[in-house]
Length: 607
Image 1 (cartoon, one colour):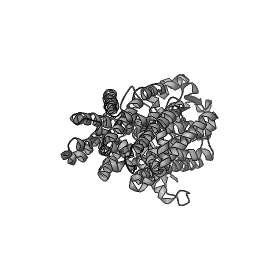
Image 2 (spheres, one colour):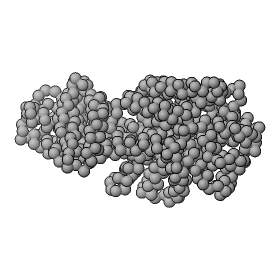
Image 3 (cartoon, helix red, strand yellow):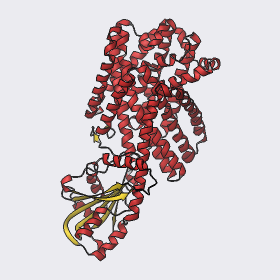
Image 4 (cartoon, helix red, strand yellow):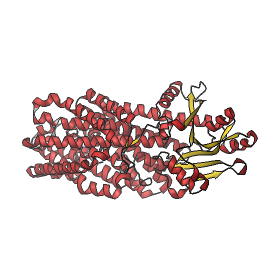
C-alpha cells in the first residue's frame, strides 16, 4: 500500500527541481519546502487525520465514501451530482492505475543510464519486460507472493533513510528546507514559478488515495503507525538528502535520487528500487481491480468476471479482462512516452483531480450527515490546497496532461452510459412486468400443473416477478412443486450487516403452498452465494432446509436492451450501452450457477 507514494523519490524531486529557472540555494530550499509540507498537509493532514476517520463499515476509498453519501442522500439532485463526482474520481483513479506502473518502473530502470551510460539502450526493453511480467503474475494473486512485499518495502525505506542521512551528513544545511518559510518566501519572490511548480510537487503525494482505499485491509491505526513511524520520516530524509546532493553539485538535479547513491552501490540500489516499483505497480493494479469490483456493485460499471485468489482474504481478487486491458494500456504508454520525465507531466493532473473529487465527497458528507463544522472547515481549507494543485497541473495538459484527461474522460463516459442505461432498463421493466404479489395472485385462476422438483427463480429486483417464472407458466402452464423466488438488493455498504435482516423469507398464503420468496441484502463488494442464502433462509423456514442446491433447477431472467429512437439517450450512447452489455459477465457465471441445471430466459426492452 505504500509502494506508490514510497517510490516517488525516484522521479518526483527531479521533476520539481526542473521547474526552477535556476538552482540558486533559495530556489532549491523553496521547492524542497513545498515538497515536504505537501506531504504533511495532504497525506498526514487530509488523508491520515481527516479522511481515514470516515469509513464505510471499515472500508475506505472514494467509492466507499460515495456509498456513505448515497445512503445519507437517498435521492435528489445532490445525489445525482455526487454520483457524477464519484464516477469522475473513479475514472481518474483507474487512469492513475495505468500511469503509475509505467512511470515507476521506467524511473527505476533509468538508473541503468546513471550506473553505466552504455546501458541506456536496454532501459526501455527492460521496463517493458518487467511490466509484462507484473501483469502475467497477477493471475496467481498477491497473496501467493505478498509475504515478500513487506520485507522488501522495509528494506527500501531503510535504504532511503541511510542514503539520505549520508548525504545530509555531507550537507547538513539542507535541514533548513524543513521550515515552511522558505516555501512562502519563494512564492512571494517568484509566484508564477511557485504556482507552476505545484503541478510537479503533486507527484510526491501520489498514492495517498491508495492509503485510504486500503483502509479496510489494515485499519486506520496500523496505517497511521506505519506512516508516521517509518514511511513519512524515510521520505523526508530522502528528499532532504536529494536536496543536499543538488546543493553540493547542481548537475545532480538531472537525477537527484542517484545523486545520493555512491557509484559502487548503484547496481544493488537499482535492484532494490526495481523490486519496490514492481510492488508499487502490483499494489496499484490490485487497487484498480478493487475499484472496478466496487463500481460494479454500486451500478456504475458492468460486472466483470472476478476470481478470488485467496480463501482467507476476500479483498484479494483478480479480474482477467481488466488485467489484460490495463496491461496493454500500460505497455502502450511506455512505448508512447519512452521516459519517466515525459510521463511526469501526465501524472500530476490525474492525481490532483482525484484528490479534489475525494475532498468534494468528504465535505458533502460532512455537511449533510455529520454537521461537523470543525472538520468541514479543516477539510475545506485542505480542499483549497487540493484545488491549487489541480489548477497548477492544468498548464501541463498539452505536455502530457491530456493522457489522464483522455483516459479518465473515456472511462467516465463508460460509467455514465452504463449508469443511465441501467436506469432506463429498470424503468422499462417496471412498465411491462408484474410485481411478485400480483403475479402470484393470478396463479389461483391459472391453476397450473405442478411438477415434482424445485425451481429457483432469480431476479435482481424484488419489486418485479421474474420473467422466467411468467414464461414457464404462460407457455407450458407448468409450475414446479416448490418455487423459490430469490431476489437480491445492494446496500450502500461493503458487506451487509447480519443484524439487519440480511435474508428475509416470505410466503404468499395457503392457496400458493410451495411458493416462497427470499430477499437477500448484499454489500456492494459481495456476490450472491445461493448455498449460503439457502442455509440462512432455512433457519427462518424449516421447509427450505429440504431444498438441495445440487438438484434444484435455476431460472435466470435476462433483459436484452434494444435501440430506441424515442429514448432520451443519444444513439451513440445507446450503442455503447449495448456493447457494454455484451461484454458483461454472463449471468450464469456471475451467479455461479450450474450451467447444466440453469435455464436463461430473455426479453427485449427498449432503452
